[in-house]
Length: 190
Image: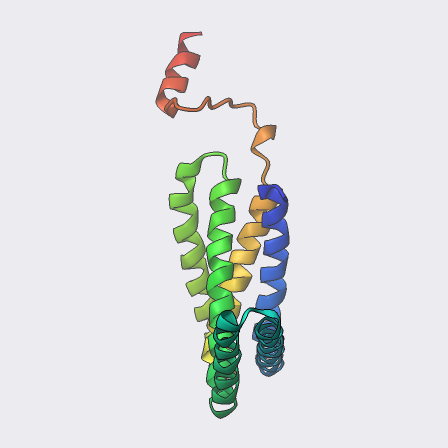
């Protein structure tokens, strides 16, 4: 398992790369995620059919039903192709944002600073989005990818910064369970 710092760096680089690609080539990113969706559907149907064939007779019907349900989802995705691609991108973005916020919480030496850092990240994302939309109005042709790409870029940059942040280098020792004012009072007494 990766430590919090390495996880922040890897997810940060992935967020920056995804954000840049989503902003620069949104059509290709959308087609790629639609293709990924179909690969996952095909693997799921194959797995459920395998389980249906190898399972006992009473479990077999359940696995065949799951394969049919995935087939129906696949057929509906043909009818509503752009919606499915955007939905998959938004699901992946939600998972990435959740993982990024979790990494931020784990990476910070002082957990209370997350209450300052997370709003700064969100505000930075909105500011960058406003700047990008004012200078590049063509980004509004695909607003979902523009928003997701911008926030992935900002959250990725913050995750990279947190990955390089090393509180062990500081000369300040903050013992667990003591408030900063108590530590300050102890240092004044010396």
